[in-house]
Image (cartoon, rainbow, N blue to C red; front, side):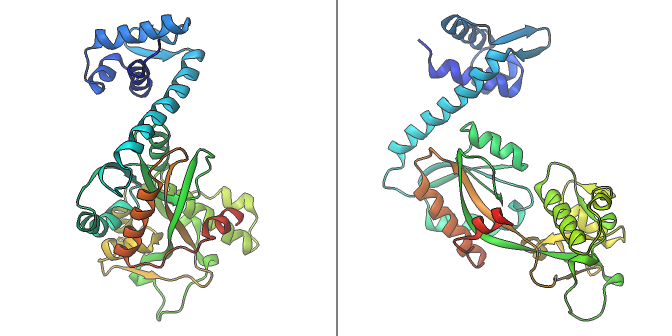
Length: 320
């Protein structure tokens, strides 16, 4: 009989690709973990893992079993959540993931509000890039994540929270006088300083530049052939590069108060329609904690003092 323990060990091995680290993650000895996986292989009647010196590789059947095992484990966690959280919103543990271009600017205001309104809630936080969060969410390692929408996965559901407008950040000595908005067509992609690859904010900025150049009549081939010159790992680093005259950047409005305290940097609004990203919560379609996620979204919007996203915001974004 296949057990959840065996599936959990297999999932950990697939994630960590090392028997010792997987055993440590599951709080068991390495021989115990290896024995359970061998018993699972005997039960199924097929080899799942190729055991090589110093590395672990999965067979084709093993990769498919891991994928299905993650779905079963996620469903089992959802089953437990049904019993634990029924009738008590935002109580107990909640595994919450946030992308790095949101966490430093939202959490300092949201966490105190959550503690005050829902004192029985215990948050387990995870901050990392979008693709990692979505993978861990699908595997059941996270309950809900906060990131930029949309998310193209039929097994996930989303709640739009608010629109986060982009502003142009540039060296103050280069900024024009007055408060007149700038046109998106004035942004030269070759001057952009962006986060390194893997950050969704980088992709959104490049997509914005491609659209604006296309609207200005610039051939798309020339746009795609003009990559950003520099990349950084945080918005703080990007800001300092702008301050020292290395280029310009697109700055999310929620980050301005924290990041742009340097007098050498000036921010300017774009002319309407202003470019923006849609921030929201995402969870598994099978999760029974939808009421919790709705309550969490309400706290976030209230704590930030932002206008809630329009009900059709996600549909409009998908159609754009």
